[in-house]
Length: 427
Image (cartoon, rainbow, N blue to C red):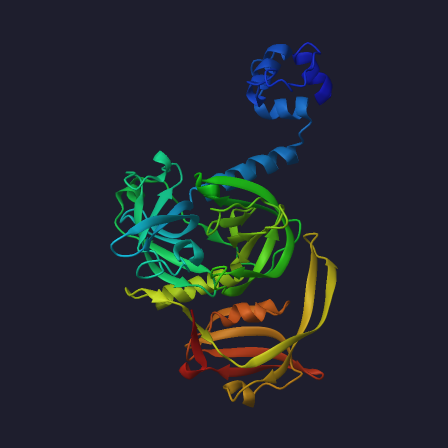
């Protein structure tokens, strides 16, 4: 029985547009499923069988739908809504404004009630000159999924106070710490999983989880429509712009105000990006800062935190200039993905760093390894130029960086050690 014939048989062959808002207003897939069991004389008809018989769903379709649903719901349990409050005006006369955003649980200890949440810096920071005191919010609350009742009122019993422990405007990332929360202890909240791939691919199914429009948690599904692009975001005001650039993936999953700081996840439930912006010009363009850069920034923030709040991130000022000499596609790989390769080479070394003695203009960078105390802590095959920028975020003072270079017909490792004076703080 075809899906069209089957559904017509269930409802006497009559069809109505429902344009008047009455016909079929209460009808849903479960009503049709129950009617199908009666019509078929099979009370034991399963939902899977119903979907296959009447809606022509294949086993692969069903597996995809159910697995994606499970992933989305797991990600909901690793997501939070965030509200930051700011006092604006004067000390004698001020108003409290709110910034609604989202966050992702990156670490949780339910026994102690402790939790670390990742969000965007712009969710907890206000560039407004009228903000009293620190422009970073000192009054932040988060809500776990399912606890978001009462329209986020200040006295909502499910609001969990959070402390801002680290933030970077440059990388639009911030970490919130929750300590000893009874709500966390009693919850089923989980931490998210990072996608450890260095690359993303066009056509991959992704979904965004977030506090869209400040209306509590929701999910939207789409695709990666561009695997990598640099986006410019104003971290300041219209009167005093402060434009920052971020490596991002573009997605067709709808992104709304309030989604900022939430996760963009792949079909395996892994975080591929930190949702940060949407396009004012194009409705089908949302952006998430790549996980490849964000997870390294987060690691650096966590390593730098020792009980004192940190602002900014220490980054290596290596002075090496790179350029893309060539770009091409390798064609379809074993997973059916068209991969891109870029030939990245050294153009110059801008100042007298340790790299002067080891690298030369024209060297093609093939592989990079970060070595700390004799052990490899991070490494990448350099497939794209962004791989270099990303892995350099892992480098700390005293680390050795081993570049595998191609110089002429030869390929060999070159090791450079970077000292403390070669680092700076990016706000």
